Length: 285
Length: 260
Image (cartoon, rainbow over all chains, first blue to last red):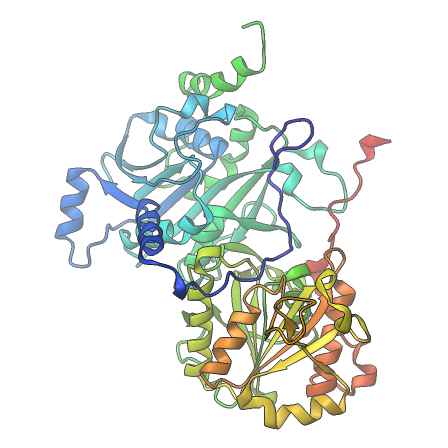
């Protein structure tokens, strides 16, 4: 919706339309358009040849991995890029490709720096395959979330698997009876019933909920009884920033034995991640 | 697809199923929330489907710090075996293109479980009421032919009104009459499917407007309780309903002190 002042707001109405009249009377052409559309919106997972070979060789067509880390949003992916993936011991091994109404437009200004990169990329350590990282910065439509999770988790062996999700969220979506602006950014956690490890931050309080990819991943893990935890970072800054990225540091401390966290972020990567937002905010540069 | 919490799936044979329709003001969902929290119903499983938008949160009915750390999803099933009652709660909108698939899924699950009867809690736009509907109570019911004989008389005794069929072309006498539930989401579709497939289904609905719909939820649940006596005697029930912790801050966060 565009308002009087021209800004675009996503508005939710709780008014529900009555279902459209029975669709059975629609003609063949409508049906074909509908199925073409569905085809176009389908989610594809691609692996590099080496990983694809090992997938094909495995008896149950899945990858073995003990830790699956999924980062959603620019700050969460930025954190992984600057603190973990910068160590050169990581290879990109695959990606998820999908199309929806927001693909390829790049109209959102913070997307400028990320336009050239594919939107969901998998990484694995060169010398060990026990950790799989997925970086996701693209918009995944509501009807694609379930499919994304089914297809990606279809490639990963469930036995011995543990999932960690890092995700960004604007502070305006956090509901709380007292003001929290002085303590931002902060982390909140949500875990599946099978996750027994000590949490490193407070639980997400009622009545807050999570939506989008983190919710889809957690729901899947909950029903499949996979241990999973979500660390959601609430920040009042709308563009990627280094302070918000640093907030995720404690979230991975329980994994410190298998994932080495650089004590300092890689300056080059950080600079590249933050550049897009800096130039946008200053009309003289 | 129903996924049971335990290894052995529970048997719902002969049970009563209560479920909401995702409809205007979320009245059905609020009433279902109230019912689950008031009766302290334990969760027995999930409805895991691609037809609903994913959402997750901590236990919406938490009473203590311990019970808060329990992940809940967009569609969950609760059950009290001793009173033969099962409740399906839906917490997210249905994806528009998958509405029909969702109806089919729910109906086939109802049939497979062998529920004695299903009661759908729903709502409809108050502003679309026609002249006849404006008079009297905002509560309405609908019964599928398979349930009509058993439940018709008790509901009439309680002086509840059946949902009126409205004229397809208002103002023209003798024009075709049809069932019209604006703002009711999948209510009408599910009801007509259950009629044609011989499923015993009742729809209880209330005319409402969007806003603070908590009073509507109480009214709808009291109406259900007058019929089925789920929580004590009808007269004292409304004080027994327990508002869940997830209803806090319905109108947003507290006021930031910086604005003063």
